[in-house]
Image 1 (cartoon, rainbow, N blue to C red):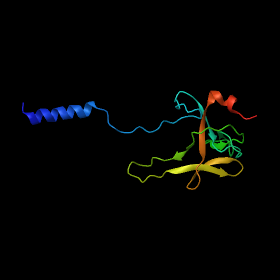
Image 2: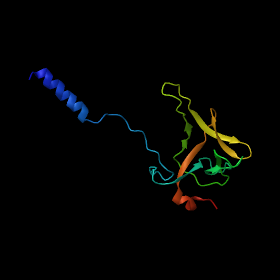
Image 3: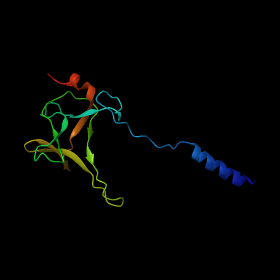
Image 4: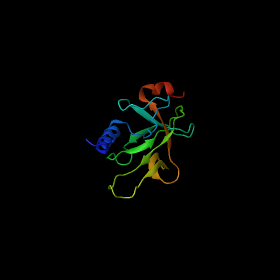
Length: 137
């Protein structure tokens, strides 16, 4: 075998055998700093303490039919330091321009989640099994 061929094959094998040097994004964490697990349930709660809002829930308010509304409860819970915003990005088609919008709070009879270009709704994640310990009395 000639040297350039062996060098090319060696380079090719080496390139497939090594891990890419791509940075991994930071993991999604709950209020305790623990990575969010798909097997656990979590409460999504407003980051802003005392703002008249608590966790999110589903509500059949308008006509008792689907789809359900996502509303913000009025109870207030303790906050953490790991805050996130919710972004809605519909997948219309692969070649379409991204239609992403932040999710904010719309105020009417209830506090409903709605798409916005202004102020995103900052949230934290509470493990569902810790909810009773996190309620403010």
